Length: 155
Image (tube, rainbow, N blue to C red; front, side, top):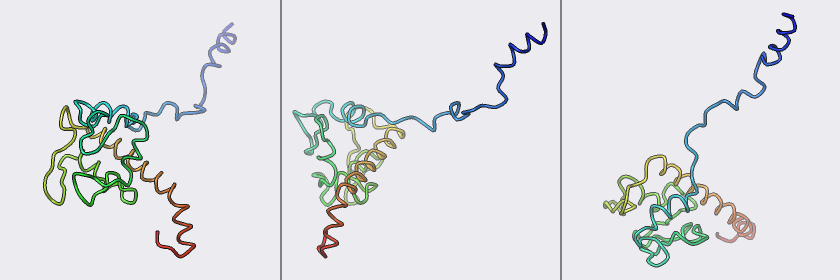
């Protein structure tokens, strides 16, 4: 009888886990959909960057927002790109969201103007999104650049 009871108990005891990684904690918060959960919720409020009033020429509500950001000159700081595909860390969009934004060495307003500023984890997610859009833009442009280089043309 004792052997039979041990036989019932032992199958539930595994000598080792077959997939221990399933019990590991996530390495931080996952990022939301930036356009829907950050730009719509934090930047397109009160007529700032919505479809009716697009302050600074920025409108975040409609599709293909990346086409209005990547490689597009900033209207409020000449010489800067909203998202710089070749140097995403230099993107003016990130500058405006940063704690101490500047244009040509002069302090400017931090965005968003209304409501709370982005928390550090939200800003990290926006930064990752900007880097991803820049990388996608470079990848899409690289066949054209390769063709130009092979022909001896300047990009």
